[in-house]
Amino acid sequence: MRPVSGFLAHNFPPAKIFMGDVGSLFIGYVLAAFAVLTTNSGERPAPFIAVLLIFGSFIYDAVFTLLRRARRGEKLYEAHRSHLYQRLVIAGQSHRRVSLTYYGLSALLGAGGVAYTFTSDAVRLAILALAGIALAAFTFYVYWFEAFVAKEKALYSTKPAAKVVEG
View (cartoon, one colour):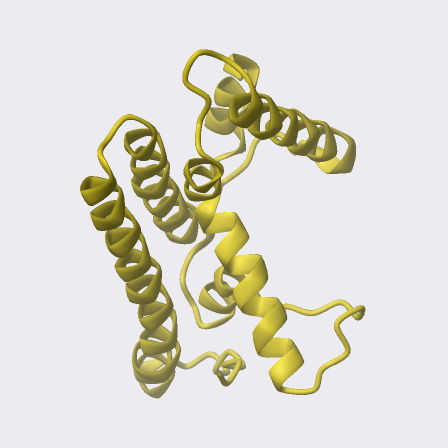
């Protein structure tokens, strides 16, 4: 994972290099293999929930977007721009800020996932509750940014307003 960490420094907005599909798919494969291997091996295998927490920001965004689109009757197999991170960019937040927001959320959930592996059941329940609160707060932040901040910026901007995806 060290090469990936080095890549992140050069891919942070404004990106100097771009990985592309092949690199992204390979990293996805490695992370999936990591998840399978850590839940099934070793003296103290990681609980499956811990692995879900570690990848929680990505899983949550995908599931939330899929369910939202299904509820709205959209075709799930068509391209779209309604992931939470895309909605923040469309509403006017910079790529850098969105990346930092996702880094923070991923770090928080990842730390919770690691801690989940080595704690008691009571602490595990608290970790799950805090993860749920963090994801709910993040979702609220996206809706709040779209509803208030983006519209407020549009009032004082000379540029045409960005289209806000309604929730």
